[in-house]
Image 1 (spheres, rainbow, N blue to C red):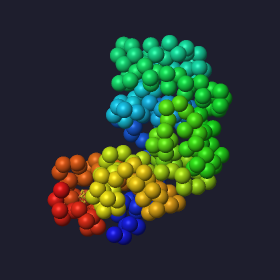
Image 2: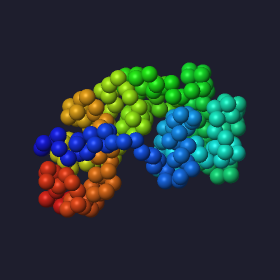
Image 3: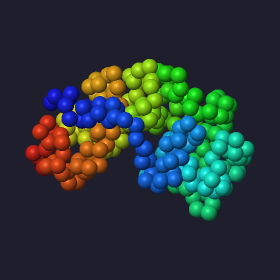
Length: 249
Ligand code: SF4
């Protein structure tokens, strides 16, 4: 399979495209907050920390919902003055913002403390000054509750969507969720039902200078055409290259 075509060129196109408003939630006010890296870089970071075990759109709404409960003020000066109990109350009342609201309240509070103590309240210092991709991923890993998948996803969004310049992109891995793993298997890149590690290392082998570049194209293929039960191969742009296309899954 000529891996340089199709999904990889699609990834390159997305990486090279002009910056646009990123629709994290499809709630205009929430997306405006998350896109405002100049004034509220911590909103993006806190949304990344919340992105666990619930639908992404719901997780990424949490900073905005907290800001509403704070009277539409999401400044770090307001956030740093919240006690852990305040954060727990804001996260849980009048209705819980996360399925695991107790745990996630603690992680939200901890992230605020970390941004304040390590970055003097300016989360943009995580990615400013042309850092290496490894440094940015590492800085996200320093947040309580953030593992390699979320750290890579955060660095990928900053590089690909926010167009933040990094010194390199080597350490931004693919976020191997179940949809990406399914697409890798059907495209014949990995064996059936591959492990997370198999997908990560195969993406590194295919595109070592930026393994995570294949992340969004894979996710889009999975979401739009390569559905778990009924893949719509006739409409998928990988149809000509995909060894599974004619088998009709
Ligand atoms: S051609 Fe079909 S099986 Fe292959 S990636 Fe596209 S939707 Fe999936």
